[in-house]
Amino acid sequence: SQQGEEDPQALSIQEGENATMNCSYKTSINNLQWYRQNSGRGLVHLILIRSNEREKHSGRLRVTLDTSKKSSSLLITASRAADTASYFCATFHYGGSQGNLIFGKGTKLSVKP
Amino acid sequence: ETGVTQTPRHLVMGMTNKKSLKCEQHLGHNAMYWYKQSAKKPLELMFVYSLEERVENNSVPSRFSPECPNSSHLFLHLHTLQPEDSALYLCASSQVRGRYHAYEQYFGPGTRLTVT
Image 1 (cartoon, each protein chain N blue to C red):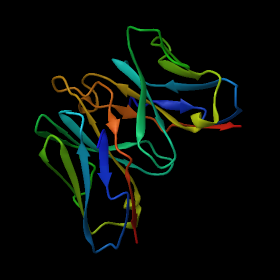
Image 2 (cartoon, chains in turn purple, cyan; image 1 turned 60 degrees about the vertical axis):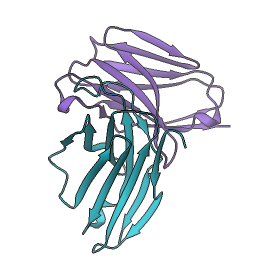
Image 3 (cartoon, chains in turn purple, yellow; image 1 turned 120 degrees about the vertical axis):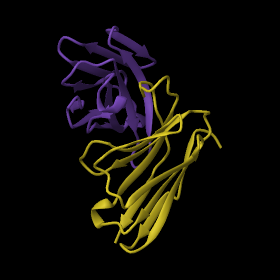
Image 4 (cartoon, rainbow over the protein chains, first blue to last red; image 1 turned 90 degrees about the vertical axis):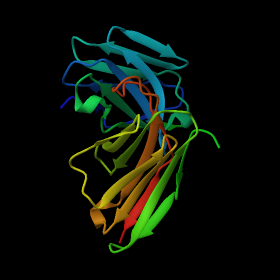
């Protein structure tokens, strides 16, 4: 399976600190995406990084991709209480899983005020 | 309305009931999806409709039946469900290029289903 596995499963930090979440996958990919889900709600797309990219930024988000290690990380800088949510990585691979995204189990982030 | 909407937001049904979940996307996308989200399990893709073609996950029981009358609407018909079917059911849409669903998906808020 090329399913992404997030690490850690849960993370608790203080407001203002940085939060780092990791995602590992098993087979080569074409792109990797990060999503956020507030409790009991739908997922919101955050950022997409292609296999030929190593780093992308979007506001306070920084995503890195290391295809040699088959891993990605999501860094949220200067976290806020509103960042409290679950974060999922999703991988895409042409020819795998009928050409669909495969989601991991997620990292639950808690940011304390 | 903008984005992806789902109704109802909450549903409690008995095992002998028949109900339907509705999803509508207002984004002009050409692909729609049903996902099941259970506690401590990865998001499970149930059904995909893309360019009027249905791609079905073989492990989805027949008590779940999708319907896509047009590119903006998606239904999930439910009948004789089991308690283990209780979960958050999420609908999503995206813009597909070719046959690959490579790009970002936009999710609705979900329907919290409880089967008693």
